[in-house]
Length: 457
Image (tube, rainbow, N blue to C red; front, side):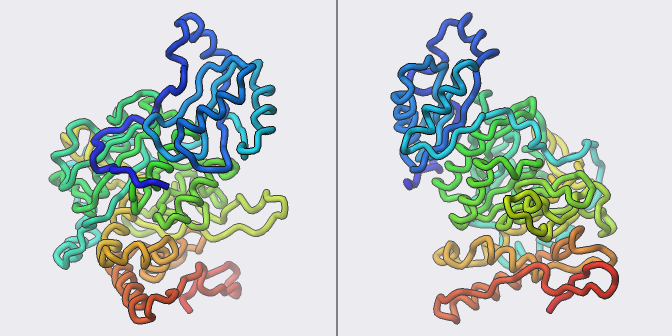
């Protein structure tokens, strides 16, 4: 792995055509291939500079007319490339590629239509209370916990142009779509990013000193490809990101390249936060929020009841494995998801949005506050996905008359979770850097009431 000087890159476009790509074809030929071509996601067994992988794959397909080979275009270490070939040649190309020693897997790189932004309709607001005030984060700010030196990656629709003056630190913009623009035309990414760290009057973010990196992985038409996410995840791992936040989800637990890469991100010690979805049914938890090391976020009404639209556990991916097993408890934690306030496009006014999409940045911003409480020199050693889950779970408040599949550990309590994170840091120091305690969810099962209730041990 290499560490890129990401702080020196104000805008990165991650969509490039490499090694004699599509741009060299005549327009008429390109139009034909756009209809009849097929995109293949080619995963390799090793990491190398992405252009080297592209060169290797192209040289191995000398007998096939290739529309283009895509790589990130600016020298990332990568484990995949995308090959676009005529539809009639796709089967032949896949067979040839799988015969190569360095090729791990070849799958179609289709538009990810099932991976959705988890939000509900917008409306403008006059003066409801600030969501930052609701969680009393001002008290934490006064103690010096403001998200400082914490880098947060927002995977979404980008952010509005002119965003820089609404954040305490420069926002680093990246684009991974074919639009080749980092700017938001939908409004979703702008809203989410503002909730984490924005300084917009009337709807400030929770962690004003966090450093934001925006990853535009959805076009203005809200389409995406798995390969765009994989490139973006690789970039996040190679540029020192601490938290990845996805206010998206879908029934994609069988998108193996995507789920493998999420597991790689969390194994690298990056905290991964994701919305569980707005399907409102038991067994409808979306991916990647349903994954073990991801912090899955559910939604509450303003009266602290479970939101009717919030997806419920258990997870269902285990039910279809070669050896089926019982699903796990999700969400991990819940927080307010109804009529949250954040900036609209252009940061001209505060608007409201509902859904687990907007609950997610509340938890993301809270985690940034927790991380800023751990001294930076040992943060990467003390803090990992398990430690953060422990802080959130032990700090959460139980909600009466809601099952563990609706609320997980309970309602987010930022102050209590901060106290737990400080305890984790102290535990690490006092134990002379031995392993710290972990936390299981559920803590305790009681089936005597006719359904599974969770109690603290």
